[in-house]
Image (cartoon, rainbow, N blue to C red; front, side, top):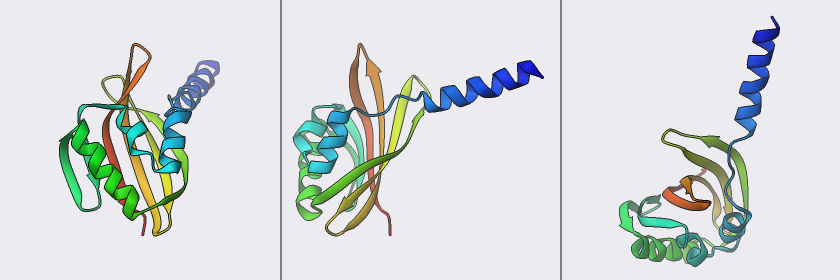
Length: 127
């Protein structure tokens, strides 16, 4: 019985130990700062936002994200869940509030040598 309880405790501890995205990225989403977010992009990034979906170079993705933020001015961003994924990657799910509504965000990233690199970014309407 003690082994089972210890296993449950460790599982819960690992669940809540998922690496969250940095405060810098949270602030960048709140402010609609595509430049700061793009600094975390890999050479190419899987991007899925309203009206644009595909794998883009980091420069293209930055411009697409900038256009999205111009059309949808952010007012707030909160992380609602963090988790670990396969291949030593992590994800954060958040709510991006804008003047035009709320969007659900999904950020898949890796941390290599203490540097966070975004591999995938999804922004979907929460309606």
